[in-house]
Image (cartoon, rainbow, N blue to C red; front, side, top):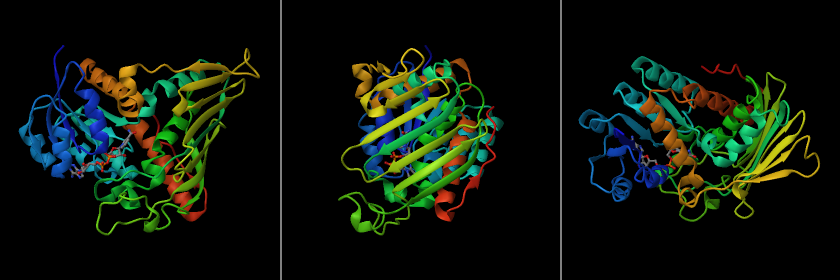
Length: 366
Ligand SMILES: NC(=O)c1ccc[n+]([C@@H]2O[C@H](COP(=O)([O-])OP(=O)(O)OC[C@H]3O[C@@H](n4cnc5c(N)ncnc54)[C@H](O)[C@@H]3O)[C@@H](O)[C@H]2O)c1
């Protein structure tokens, strides 16, 4: 199998997770890395079997090292610039979620992929999770009829520390609902569209910074690294999304649940329901044969995957991207899919700020 030569740009927390499984994969060779932060770069370099060029300026890396593809995991506000530069350098590009912090940036990335005839995959990795994809298969099989209501309820801890605290600043992260829950909005799109096309039409959000992100003094010890951090993101929200199929979806996000972490996702259809608990690796199916007590499907994650990033979903995402590059097949989780989740997330942020519903003209899938 010919090696795919890979560049890694942005070697922070997320990329370390990618590297753990990438170095085990056959048919791929990491040939260079870039990060503006020397310590983060050095930590990533230590994980490689062989030394490779490691540069502080990714543009110099693009100019000096021959490669076929790249992984990008820089702060969200840099996705557009870095992804467009990589695509213009002729690299198939796997850019982390959220695709970008504005729809104009998403458009620029899609255009860069098109003009260079390169693939752009967006890191909406839940689509590769064995748990979410089992739920999706059940919905798509018609087992619960037409999906009408989807929900995601997440109780989680605050964000981990990031480079220059970009994640606490809405201008650099896009806001909590862009940075974190673009995954959930993508799942809403995926599930509501599992039995035919669906497009988000309207978003209503209510949320605020009411506890952990109310005040810098509430941040857990060691969670900042900038000297004067900007803190302007929300820490809890309810968001409702209407679809043109008549389906609706609802998000509950709480970022200050230091104990009792939980993520429940459900899809209620016209003939049954799929409800699952992501952190418990099980999916419950209520259908015509199991109307009262569900059929529970335990999700078996192989041991080696379990220890990798996000219980192996990042590894399965890598396999998929590399396979697309190898076969010359365009990834399904492309710029249009990425943009559709950003559209909902930005509308949700706006609705939270304005207390008004926000209409969406969803970008069609290609
Ligand atoms: N798919 C997922 O579930 C998932 C999970 C975590 C993070 N992410 C995404 O990955 C991205 C990175 O997040 P993280 O948690 O690793 O953050 P991080 O702050 O730990 O890492 C970001 C890295 O980018 C580097 N960087 C900043 N500017 C750069 C530049 N101009 N050129 C090169 N490197 C630069 C920083 O030094 C840092 O090492 C974000 O977009 C985030 O949303 C995705």
